Length: 125
Image 1: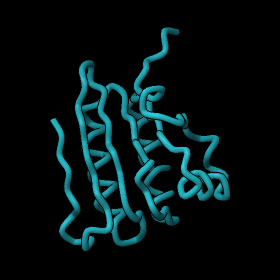
Image 2: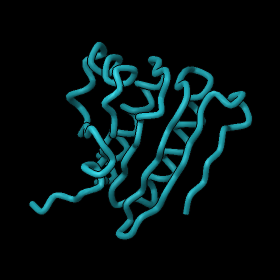
Image 3: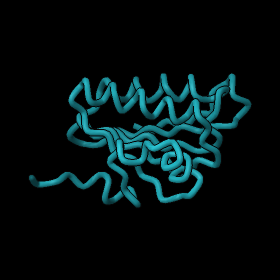
């Protein structure tokens, strides 16, 4: 199942694509600007996917701006995933995402992967 939608209240500044894979793997691909305007919709979409996930992958490669409200959403999602026992993996190698995470001292809190393939490959241990 795939859905792509720019939220109606964000003037097309963000795109979200969700995909369900076998075994409960959920992939949320995010593009555009993640700021005060778009972060509430992002939070809702990710938390909805989390409720049905055995593993949640957030593909952040399409993000063009990641503001502090977006960082707060990522931390909130991380906390919710931990509470639910769902592994959370981020796909990002872009400076637009890595730099804000690093400056805020948050990059070490996440399981970060450089590509989608490595993020969806389940560890054997």
